[in-house]
Length: 287
Image 1: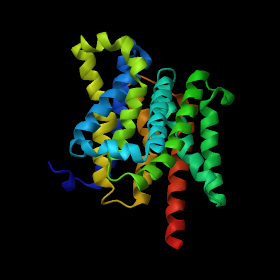
Image 2: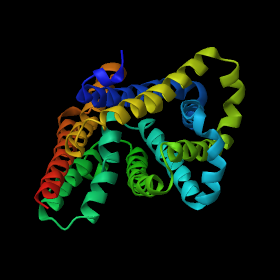
Image 3: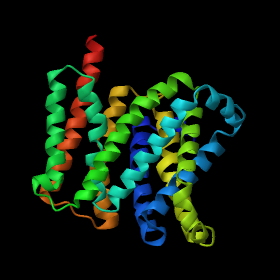
C-alpha cells in the first residue's frame, strides 16, 4: 500500500503507537543487556537505518558537517541525552507517566515563547499533572525516574530549538541522519560492554532492529508523509494524545497501572497540550 493513499490522521496515530511499541520492546531488552546497553543499541541501529534511508545523500554528509559542525554536534549530543534520559526513566517508572512528564519540555517552550495568558493557564494544568505524578503529589513513583523524565523533557525542548536551526542550515533529512550518527558515536562506550552479547544473540539483534524501526524509521516516514497533508494545528492535537496512548500500551502490554491519580495526571497533560496547540493555531489564524 502506498502511504499517500492512507489518511494522514491514521499515519500520525500509527507513528505515535509505533513509538510506544518501540519503548515496550526496549523494556524487554533491559534485563538482557541493561538500560545503557539498550539505549546504545537503539541509537546505533537507528543511525544505521537512517543512513540506509539517506544512502543517496551520504556523499554530501562530510561537507555539510564541516560547514555546520558545532550545530550538528550539539544536535547529536542532544539526541543522545534525550533518549538516554527517557530510557532511564522508563526503566524506573511506568511508560505513561514518563511520557506525560517528558511533555514538560515542549510545554515549557510554549510558555517561555508566549505572552498569552491562556498558554500559562494550560502550562499550569500540565504542571499540576506532573506534580500529581511526582513524589511531591504523593505519588509512589521512583523519584529518580521522575527526575530522568524531567531531564528528557528538557532535552526534548532543546531538541525542538535545535531542529529548527538544523532545518534552516541543512537541506532535506541529512541533519537528522548526521545528528543520529553523532549520537551513535557518543553511545559507543555503552555499547562495547554488551557488544559480544548483541553480536552472538540473534534475538537481541532482532529486538534492537525492532526498536529502531518502531521508534525511528516508521514514525519518521509516516509523519513526514502526513505533514504534507495536515495542518500544524491538527498534527499538534494528534501528537498531544501520546501520553494517553503510552498509558494504554503500558497497561495492556506491560501490566503497568497508574491508578486514578495517575490517570488524572496524564489527562491534565494531554488536555494542556491540546489546549496550547489549539490556541496557538487560533492566534496564528487571527494574525
